Length: 210
Image 1 (cartoon, rainbow, N blue to C red):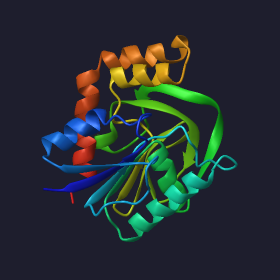
Image 2 (image 1 turned 135 degrees about the vertical axis):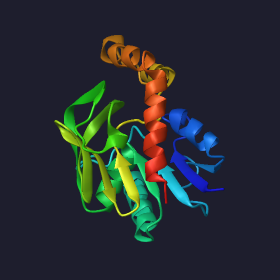
Image 3 (image 1 turned 90 degrees about the vertical axis):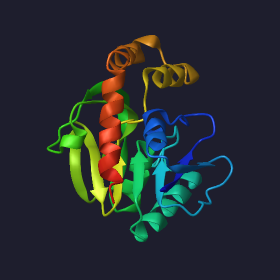
Image 4 (image 1 turned 30 degrees about the vertical axis):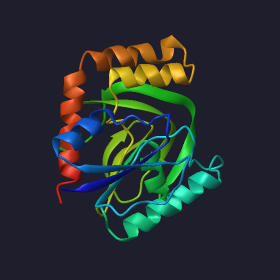
C-alpha cells in the first residue's frame, strides 16, 4: 500500500474530488495536512499539494507561501514522488527554478491544453490567476502559461484535476464569484463529469507509476 500526504487548506480548496476517488481505488493510505495547522509533513511515499487562494507570484508571495516553496524544494531534493495542483504546481515551479506571475484577469475554463502527451489529452478544469513559466520538462501549455511540467519525479499541473462540477459551484459561491464568470465552465464539466474523472485517473496512474 502506498502512503500519500495531502497538503491543503482545511476549508477552502480542500476537496479531493477525482483525486480522492483515485486514491480510494488504489487502496492508498492518506494523511491530510492542513496549512492552518502545520507545514510539518508526515513520513509518506508521495506528496500531493492542492490549490490555495494565496500566491507565490512575484510581488504577491507572503511568508507562508515562501515557507511552502521551501518545503516543496526539500521534498523534491530527495527525488520523491510529488504532484502539485494549481498553487501546488506554482510552488513547485518556484522551488525548481521557474517563475510565476500575476495575470490581469482570472482564467476559468473547461478546455484542452496543448500537449503531445496522451495522458494530458482531452478537456481539463482550469481556474487560476497566476501563470507559470516552468522549469524542467514542459509537457502541456496554454496560450498564456505552461500548464504541466516535470522535474524528476515531481509533476506540476495547472489544471484542477480534482474538480467536479459540485466543487466548482461550492468554490465559486465561497468566493462570491459572479455566476457569469463560472457557469459556463460548470455546465461543461457537469456534462463531462465521468470523462474528467477518467482522464484524472489516467494521469495519476502515469504520475505515480513508479
